[in-house]
Image 1 (tube, rainbow, N blue to C red):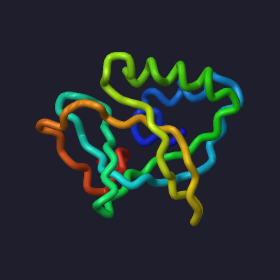
Image 2: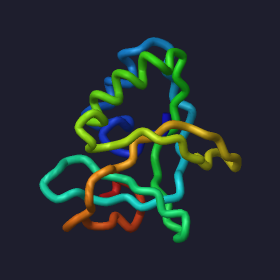
Image 3: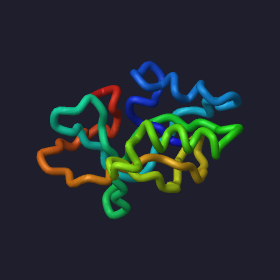
Length: 123
């Protein structure tokens, strides 16, 4: 699982990653896309953009029980309401590339502001 916002270490929803045993931090990574500050929200939204050399920076986790963890996180991320959608993406980490699930913003980006660094912690 690649996380880049409120599920990352030190953020308000990070404890959800420890609710299912066996979830382990792998390291810092990035995906190709753009990160946006959403108006009136305290969480960001990432969208894929493979045409530009923009990256979203975040953390990669390995899940021992992916089905249980993904069910839990789908609820946290508002997938049923259409707020975010879960998608497999390429994650660049430690000079290599891995596939991982992440949550991409699924709503229009009206009035959202690009976070140029791609890092929610630096926004």
